[in-house]
Image 1: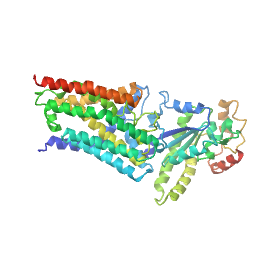
Image 2: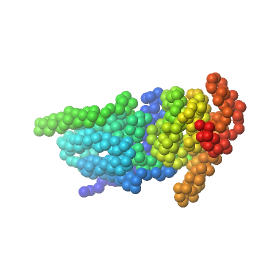
Image 3: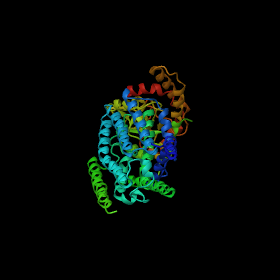
Image 4: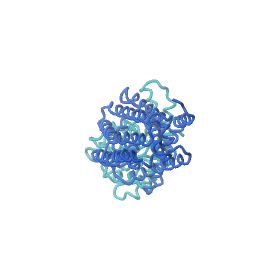
Length: 299
Length: 219
């Protein structure tokens, strides 16, 4: 395997700038959300103030394992994004992401708080809801480009002949956008943890985490959000610089769209989340793959 | 100034109020007042909260609840009593099941009078609470890291200091449970607020410790 310069730059940029970009996005998110609700909103740097404050707070842990699990969550999220921006195998990236999320679930399960446990159960349900679509996204990118390696996908598809993967994967792109709402923890699918004031489950999975531990979860989310937007970026790559620019712009537009969806919907029940996301996975994701498989022979 | 004053998260609990103050607390979140522009978030979780807003007086049934919420909050933390019921018991003071104000159960740092307390007064009180929070943070940093008992005594000292050190204007002098104020504020609430503040301008901070006991006796 040859390591390209771009891969090293990508990895370094993600590890160093990832949390800053992610935190800044979170601040912009809060400001835009406030403006959509007719409020002024907090400073853009508010998420950084929050995390600094949480680090300063008295550490309170329910049990000894909790901090370990959260630390694993953060580390595996960093590995996930690191592998992604290093141009490694897409399937490996997806499985590491699942592992990371499982550590958060175990951390939430490890306390006896009912809120935390229901939050953990809902987190598992959410994972059930979005995982198939994430896998189909990887399969779709493989079918258009002939490789699971992100460094190869970045160069554009062999099959596509210079076209961006999106050309053949519009259905899968739509499906990925749908589950992105779950991954960003936005309404209507913010079942296990919400950044808004609805308190039906107190704070879901993070109920029993406080202080420094909660700060680590926040930082992990920043890393995770940057990585998830990177997925959208991947749909637009054919090895040219201007499509890279388009990829960044579309990723930002999708982030805005998710904020809009967040403010336009109320929280749904988990049954709806599961049914809707699987329905979308089948109608958009699987149908896209079947059509692609059929027309691949004709091209 | 520490970062804690830039991101105060609030937990709100209703003791036994008429809900008037609760509505005003929630009004602070609306576009009209939008406290989130100061980084204030209304969280439902005591473990995430820095400021404990209590509306309504304390009754026999919710003593343990209030204490538990207070104990679950990680240091540094401050308590703000919102509305006249929370500061002294208000019109419920003479009820057989009412302990009195919040300070009969847990230490209170900021008193926000009013019936119901106006959103402006609540925001003002929360800003005053930030001063107290900052003081406590400094006391927390200064304490020797030995044991929990040392921490408790350090924090106890800090809370007393912060009452004196807090910005003077917003929490008008609290009506303490020991005070003889049954008739004064009841009836014509709006004008009496100013009257009270003018009348007893002496600091309530020093009496705070003893107030708890006297309130209990009375109840």
